[in-house]
Length: 234
View 1 (cartoon, rainbow, N blue to C red):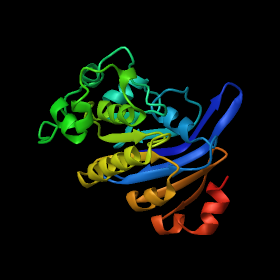
View 2: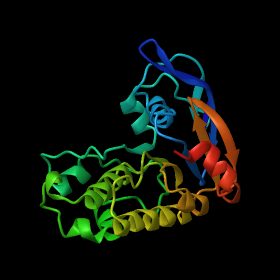
View 3: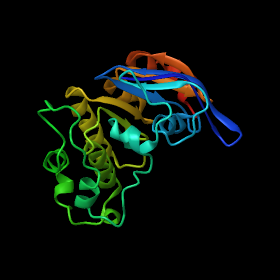
């Protein structure tokens, strides 16, 4: 589904990514983990075409998207739930959702993401359709950001800091939603700090350290106290 080979990136003259190799098979969930400032968000930005190309190659289902602009990457089927949510504050919930709507990429898709389907997934949004983006709680904003990404009918969903800053009940709703999307076969790349949940949810686990892939393993392996202490501890 998604392949990164030898990808580098820099902020000005400061190199941030050093030969990143990632592979996310179709229909699976990849957890990208690591301490703050290790290159996770930069990796996402590079995938989405939000940073200039330096070295390496990025492919989506075999198609080279390395040099594509962000709009073309999104149109190709990558839906992003960005860190900080970034919903449109001057639009209503309904407007936030329909503004991003795209038709399914496969004519035989029996279950495309529509406004009704997103509202069925997140009933709280249905109760707040006329509310402005700024009138939602943090959890509701994250549901809106996720629903907005689903309205693009993505082949691959990327969530950067999926549950950061959310109350426990809101976090649980997001995790339940992702588990459901996984059962439906949606490919997902998720960044989050809740290792115990990711260990169960994700099929593949990768840890970044100073712009490099430092560790790969299974859900059981990532729960090893030595792994958590060495690569994920503060």
